[in-house]
Structure formats: structure tokens, C-alpha cells
Length: 399
Ligand code: ADP
Image (cartoon, rainbow, N blue to C red):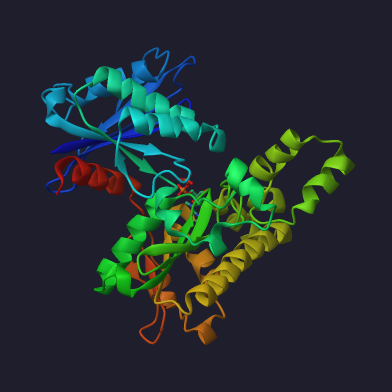
């Protein structure tokens, strides 16, 4: 069966088609500038050059119409007709406390996701538009929702509650939800496979270090804790997000700078992180280059970043009473050789020993710890689309 995976943003849309019997990627693509001038679809059938088509697309339905045309194109397509696409898997950011796993999309599910818009105002509306567009254009194809928050729903109250008045939780759903769940699940399952053990028998710390970044403590296959919170701004230092700060700073700086809460929200989301700290860039490659050229502020920003990841690793080892493996994934986790080294440095007493030679690698499934390391350190490129496609296939076929 061929499965179409859709990841809808507010003005963009990423897609892939996978052949599930072999888990082979058949094609992938990106639609940009939906609803604005210069709409474009960039489609790539694996093994062929990219096919770029600029054509007006007023909304997500238009965009998905063009995706479906590309999928059935005689030259660039991967199916003779849409009937060959057996199911669609949708990435949805927020399912609140409603779903702890992927589900077949029904009218009730759509209603539940609409109720979560308040919690993810930038993401859920776009995800829902993608679902509505597919429903209109492929009314007989089953669809599955795969949620960024779902994997984290196993967290116990001591991990997800904030020490605020309890009624904020009961009335407004103020709690830690966590994000990147599909990635944390994919790499923790892959780690178990690589270590030849069952997920139930392992304690794993998964480090998803991309533009957005989060850690998860996965104990016996279930998330015990994660670093992102009520929103994806919490936890680690990120490209432009601040991660954990003293909450009193917001009011203090707002008063000093004459800013309101919306302006402070922009500061913590878009002007902070390594970008704000280094004054150079949100891209780690630029910050690393600047640090190598002697920019001390950039070097300090990288130290703050590594320090924060390290402190979470320590916290999660304490929470799980140890750890069998640490996994690095996403842009920086998969490529940042010096950052991985900085994070793992001086942790020998915790049984964490990185092998410099094995660490000199990018973007492949591999073990990068020394043989003597009690805690195995793994590098696993994430593949959220494959995880979404697998869930979709399993739910639709019952296999
Ligand atoms: P997103 O959260 O946007 O999906 P990615 O997982 O693609 O992000 O990660 C993007 C980040 O990965 C970039 O900002 C960049 O800083 C970092 N990165 C990518 N390649 C390298 C590299 N070779 N060395 C260091 N950092 C890298």
C-alpha cells in the first residue's frame, strides 16, 4: 500500500509518498507560499531531478490539488491514479490530553482537534486545513492523525504539572505537553532495535537538537519527562527560543523596555536562543564559525547551549535512576560533531564516554560511544515521516 504523508504549515506543505510493504520512499515535495504571490510546488520523484512548478494556489485545497496532480503525473508521478494511495497520514501538532497515540480521523477527532486550537494557534489551524482539503479531494481515502504531543502523554503528574494554582490546569489545561513526540518515538524505537533490546527494557534519553530542540526521558518505552512544556519555547536553548528562564524576567524586562506581553512573547520566541546570545545567527554553523574565528560571545553561546543539554541529561538520569542510552538526532544532533563532544564532555563519572573517532560522523545510524561506556551514545537520523506512514498503515490495515 502507498501512504501519503502530509505536514501542513500555515503557508507551506511538505509531503511524501512511501510504499509501505518495503518502507521505500517514492517521492517527496514541498509547496510554499500558499495563499500568497509566487506559490510554488517543488516535487521530487526519487531518482529524478526536482520538478518545480510555479502556479497560483489560493488555499490548502488548491495546494493539495496540485500535490495530487504531481503524484499522478505520467513522468514525475508515483501512482497511475489516486486509487493507488491507500491512506493519508497527517502530522498534527497538538492533541492536548485527548490522544495518547495516532487515530483514524473521524468527525469527532476533527472536533477534538479544533478544541485544541487554543493551545496551538499557529499550528493546529493549518493542520486542520490540510485534513479538510484531503477530505474534500479524496473523500474515500482513510486518514490518520499523528500528533506531536501524543508520545508524551504517558508522563506522570510530577513531570507535567507546574507549581501554579491547580485550577489553571483544570480550567485552562496549563501543563507540560511536550513536542517532537513523533521524532522521540522514532529514535527511541530505532535505538532499541540497534541495541538488540526491547524498548520496555531500556532507559533512553533522546536529544532532538534542531532549530527547535527538546530532550525526552523514555523509560521502558514510555516518556517519563520532556523538556518542552506548555509551549515549544521551554527547556533547552534553541535557535531563537530562550528555553528555561526565570519567569519573573518577563515582567522586569517588559517594564524596563516598555514592552507588552505580546512583544515579550516575540523576544522569547524569535530573538533569543543562540541567536540572541551570540548576536551572530540562529544557525549553529554560523555560530560555530564565528566562535572558531575568535568571537567570544559566540563561543559563550555554544557553552550555554551545551551546559543546558548536559543539565537535562543529569536530571533525567536522576529521574530514571540511570540510563542505558543517549540518542542524538535532528540537524545539530546529527551533524554537530563539536556540539556532541561538548555535551558529553566530563560525564565519565556518570558512565558516559564518547569516542572521538566514532563521533567524527554525520547523519547515519551508528554508535559513537567507547566500548567501555556504560551508557551507549547513538546517532540516529530522525524520520518523522516514516513514523507517520507506519502508524497510518498499521491503523488502516490493522497490521
Ligand atoms: P528544524 O527544527 O527546522 O527541522 P533541523 O532539524 O533541520 O531543524 O536542524 C536545523 C539546524 O541544524 C540548523 O539551524 C543548524 O544550526 C543545525 N545544523 C545543520 N547542519 C549542521 C552542521 N553540519 N553542523 C552544525 N549544525 C548543523
